[in-house]
Image (cartoon, rainbow, N blue to C red; front, top):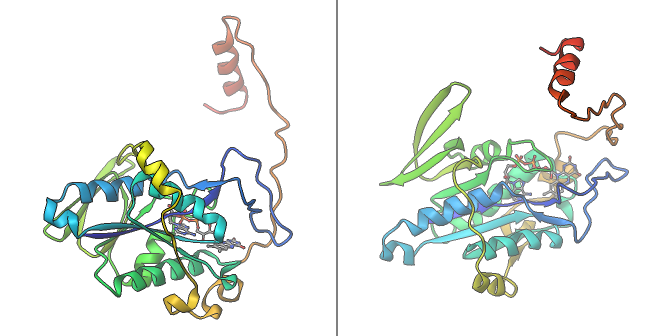
Length: 268
Ligand SMILES: Cc1cc2nc3c(=O)[nH]c(=O)nc-3n(C[C@H](O)[C@H](O)[C@H](O)COP(=O)(O)OP(=O)(O)OC[C@H]3O[C@@H](n4cnc5c(N)ncnc54)[C@H](O)[C@@H]3O)c2cc1C
């Protein structure tokens, strides 16, 4: 089984975020990390391979893929620490300013290139990138690849080439299935990502990352980046500090003060 896991390098969500003059997220060289929700996607891929018999496992691989500048290697190194077999970074000056459509086109082109030397059975993504929070890349990638999409999985299994997920929606639980190859996005309820072990942490430092540019994956500069973008950030500004903060010190009647606040502000 061959599984590709697109992973995103995102700014540390606990850091103060700023924007460039063009309205883009300012990305420092050192403050980025693997998008936390992508750890669930990696874990799902590793568990599927670990569940195979020995012969199938021997010919299986999990490939982490990122689209981004050299700093994005930090996300791939973390993916290696968790246990992926291979890592690919697509990078090109022309990718700067890509919107969700350009990013999805780029990820799909990498998947197609990997599939050129053997079928990719599954593309497993996280449910959102914690910086952009568009949650739309999995759907766009499946559309680019012409593959079925099974999104927001809280359970995932693959039997005899059939992919099945459970999807918990508001008051409804859906069971969906599609033939592989398919694109699956997983929630953080699917599993608990493993901690990297010492051996993998050490090995991850020196593992080779394959670096491709647009010509390696058959894309033209006009299809991605600012040139191919269908959306634009018109403006961006830091959120103003909250003016109406009311701190209640609980001396035994904090609950009453809270209830009073909710009633006064028509919040019940
Ligand atoms: C080089 C580059 C430059 C960009 N420049 C701009 C810009 O100037 N202005 C702007 O508005 N946007 C820009 N973007 C797009 C922006 O980063 C979006 O956040 C991105 O398109 C994906 O949307 P999202 O992060 O909300 O993903 P979501 O749809 O929330 O992510 C869902 C899942 O998709 C996968 N995924 C998402 N992004 C990537 C990725 N890059 N590589 C691998 N897997 C991924 C992950 O598995 C993730 O969990 C750029 C993107 C790239 C790659």
